[in-house]
Length: 241
Image 1: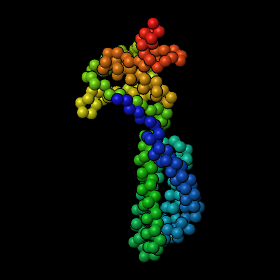
Image 2 (image 1 turned 30 degrees about the vertical axis):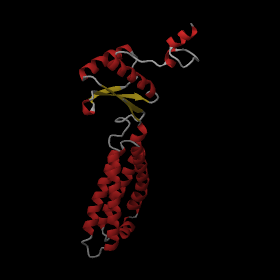
Image 3 (image 1 turned 90 degrees about the vertical axis):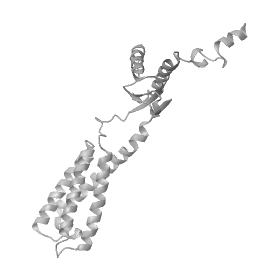
Image 4 (image 1 turned 60 degrees about the vertical axis):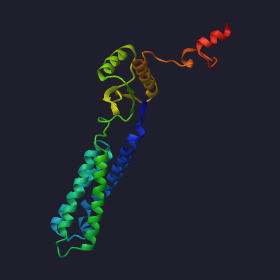
């Protein structure tokens, strides 16, 4: 049994996460600049009591947001930058919760701010988790894989595969062997570069046939060059005689 794992299904969520990361980067530039340049206005909007410490803290947070946003927009190590942004949001949640104890705080605005920042932190955390180990160095998204189940012992399959590799120009970039479910033999998983899937699938099919039947079965189309009747070679010769 041959199975195919296409990259589209594996990369849809990371692609969406990268879009979210870039969007949050753009948002971070705007909110960071506002906090850094107008901390008193931000404090009023959040419902926090104005003070020198609050103003200094908002300016520092704004600069952090800008730095994180630049990192996200660069596209390099997006998960790391997203975790940094999520950590900043968690810190902001703590500060907002602490501000609730102030008598001069606008609690209605504070609760709205806490809800908004909590939702944003959740999005940031999920995005960072989705982007984990998705950098070009960790995952080559131009690759897919094929797998085949062979009803033989692992040692026998591995030995035969080594000989098969020496006899053919192998298209697989990496292979691994795993026990098949239900004690049905061994699963051979092979990764290939984009555009090599069908050719590798043909190689795996030939290998499976050699292992299980001792020979490779060819179709009529594979042994007759050019147009020809859809009949086995022997039957065709018999008809002509």
